[in-house]
Image (tube, rainbow over all chains, first blue to last red; front, side):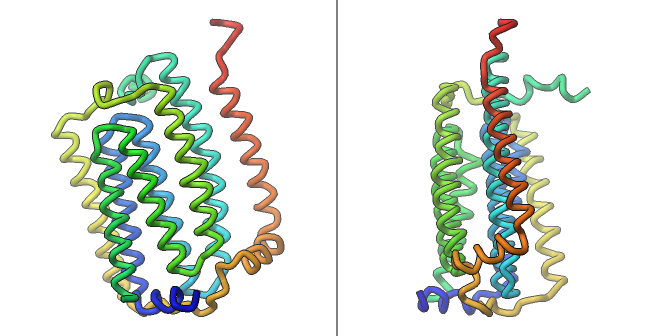
Length: 109
Length: 167
C-alpha cells in the first residue's frame, strides 16, 4: 500500500481540479447534445462522479476526513436519484412509447 | 512512474467519458460508463481512499449500472429508435460545454495553487477512520440519508407500478 500512496505525492492539486472540470464539462455537453433521457441521466452521473473525485482530492490535500464523508452522502443521493429517475423514465416510456425528451415539451409552459 | 500513472488513468477516464456521450447506441453508452467508473475507482485507490474505492465499485458499477442496463433492456432501445438532435444544436451544445470548461480552467489558473498533493494523513480514507467520523460528527445526516433512501424506494415502486384503477 505504501507504494500506491507514494505515487500520488507529486501530482499537483491543479491537475485534479482541471481533470474534474473536464469530466464535468463532458457531462454538461452530454446533457445538451443528447435527446435520449437515459443518456442524459448517465451524463448527470458523470457530473456527480467528477464532483466526488474532486471532493476526495481536496480531502486528501487538506488531511480532513469530512470531504470523504460528503462523497459517501453524494453516492447515497445518487442511488436514490437514479431509482426515482429511472422509474419516471419507465412511466414516460409506458405512456409515450419513447424516451425522447422532446415528447415532454409541454412541460415547458 | 508515479506521475504518469495518474495522467494515464485520467486520459482513460476522459476518453471513455467522451465515448459515453458520443456513442449512438445507448447500450454501448452504459458499457462505456461502467469503464469510466472503473477508472474512477483506480483514482480513489491512488488517493488511498480505500473505502470510497470499494463503495464506488459496488454501488456505482454494481447497483446503479445494473439498474441502467435493466431499464435499457426493459425498454428495448437500440440504435434505430435513438432520437438525435440536429447538427446545429449539437455544435451549439459542444461550444457551450467548452465555454464552461474554459471559464473554470481560467479561474483555476487565476487562483494559482499548484502545490503537489501530499497525503498528510495516509490513513484518512480507511474504513476505520471514516467510520469514526461518520458515526460521531455526521450521525444525524447519516440517519436522515437512510430516510431518503426509504423515500426513494417507496417512490420508485409507486411510480413504476401500473395504475390498476384507471387502466
